[in-house]
Image 1: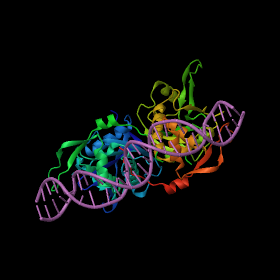
Image 2: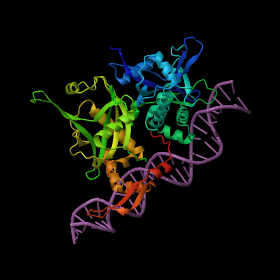
Image 3: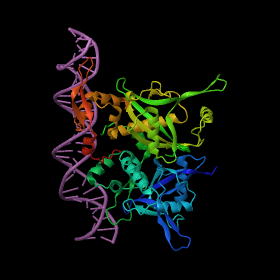
Length: 245
Length: 245
DNA sequence: GCAAAAGTGTTATGAATACACCCATGT
DNA sequence: ACATGGGTGTATTCATAACACTTTTGC
């Protein structure tokens, strides 16, 4: 394995994590902190996406997976390359320049941006060596480089895709309730959905398999649990050509 | 303007052109030809997408527009960045290596791929200095590099997008008939559409404006001409959140 | 028994589908 | 007059949208 970095090409990963408890769609960010030599002045104190240079003999998808594994330890997650960002000035605001002095960045780096889907709980951020932290997509902190834009474009893509493909289930635990799915759609899309209509629609999907199991440890009527069967989905999937313009 | 090339980053352009007469969705390709020094053996004789290195202080979108203008003379076309291709071996089959010797390529180049939409007629390919030629999307020639894959992925994206956004009109002349639109959908999607249902649907769109004009020079009943009003479309556009999984 | 969320049914409306013939024009 | 594609209407089916109350459980 040749681990020589390509100096001007990177991947950046927007990690979306959904928290079923708080019904919050979150983004995982890492801390960027730099003090002046004299330790008197804070030069940079904000957050960025996780990312890294692509290696010389590494495919882009593999770079993204590597970066994600390095941060979270997780593999085999849903991953989507959604856009390349290459504005000549994307790394050149004041704080970014300070930061880059400190690192080994080429000033004109283009980055291939990916997003990942997982459950917030699956990442243990305690004592994470990158000081990783979850932030609600609706309450992002100050971000370095062009990472705010990257996150927002990832989010747009997610909003579109979740209406067309069953990627929503990547954000939920293996066993979930119909209301979990509704809450998730409502969080992602920032809309209200009628519960009765939504239930009817989902319960009719063959690929949503009701389990012989109900919620436990809740102080209310425990809900029916379901799982998503990708097998059944793939078997039943029929492209429709509905023109919706 | 700094025209220094970035040696390992390029853009490639999939140029889709629709020909209303032949009802053919075409791709514009340029010739790649190389003989051995002795002029006895043809080493490379195939086609590739138009593309070029990104310049050091140039945005990716601008690179794509520049490349397209260089080939066709056209500007202000519909353009979409749809994917980055960066497999370490994407340029390393036998013929590609021969070709690269001849050019100034970095073996590990990643390319940001765009597609453009226009009318086949708008490009004059006579005496084009790149020997550009149109090929039906259904009958592509032998292609260099990974350009076949790039074209097919662009085509997939186009098939999806044309159902969701009014980009279809980028492929049609300013004045078109309802049947032109139907033919175009049928060409892109390779499906048959019921004419009566399709007409009803389209005629009800406010953004399709009937003109006080009919086809001329046809030896049959001349059809009503329409235009697409982007203004009206934008004004009327309402995001719908139909979950279609 | 009370709080909390799960779960349920009906009606109305609009869109998609399926389907076959007459019409207007140029030659 | 004829060949060619333009243009039209209806009935059925299906999905969505709107809407309020009862049920089940843990405490």
